[in-house]
Image (cartoon, rainbow, N blue to C red):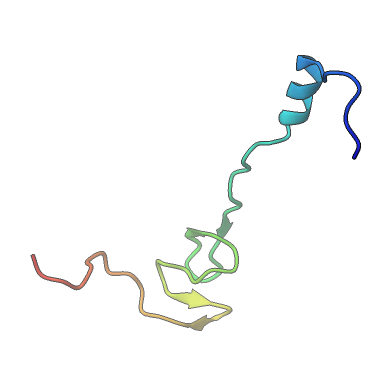
Amino acid sequence: MAVPKQKQSHSRTTKRRSQHKISSPSINACPQCHSPRLPHRVCGTCGYYGGRAVMEPDSGHHGHEH
């Protein structure tokens, strides 16, 4: 089994770890209502995806009584 002969320096370790970061999600404009949405997802504002109505738009309430 291969084993490192020398200890890796702190500098080399942090250079390697500098690439371990989260990228922010890309946000596109909905072609129907132009509100921001994630790509390949149904628009929550108008309910359209791929040029056709897929679901009812979100009205803001959750459908249950308090």
